[in-house]
Length: 281
Image 1 (cartoon, helix red, strand yellow):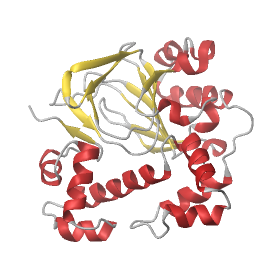
Image 2 (image 1 turned 90 degrees about the vertical axis):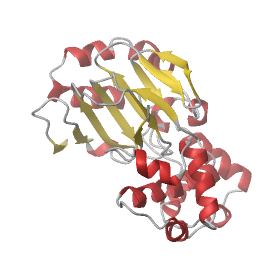
Image 3 (image 1 turned 30 degrees about the vertical axis):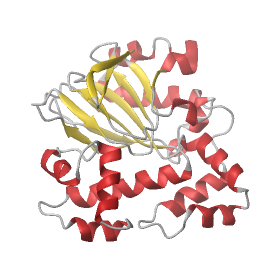
């Protein structure tokens, strides 16, 4: 494992790249301890990817409805956060957290079920992996911080169903869809992978948890906020054209659907982290 950034002080995030056999499936493993933030709640924007979240501070997690903060889902402290198609809200009291950021479609070999079954959901690790997940959080809490990464890596590899492999059509499609604005339409990719449209959507949905069209829309939105996040003043019409929207109004509609915010409100409220937006009081 390569250490990307160290955390000698509380509140600084540690990020580790996974071992070789996990690299096609896991982008990174991360943790932070004792992070204190000024805001109580923050929006989490959709990325098209899954995360494993383990709350080391308490054996629970909370997920709030972005449209009605009185609606709260309470889950155990160890969960899979499936690929989301819209925004949700979390509190910032979860100050010591360990997580696995899966690559697009990367969780599929470990789930033992279609990824679409956890779309827009937080699901307990025990509901997915049963007794093999029991006690994992306690072992991680008791471990030294620098030992947690290897422990979690080893556990994750043990959960793989069969060989660590992916459907070649999905691998090809994810590579093609990574260009923004997209140089390949969904139909063009379907033609090249040699599958019927229906079959391609099925295998993509099974591994990624989203349809190809929805996944591409979320990636275009992600590209837009990456560009916006870097600047104080944004020419939204120019940005819309650069990332492949029809026009500025198209960009505004997509922003509203995926973040619950207008582009200008995102720019005003943005925080340090691209996809975590402090919630205005």
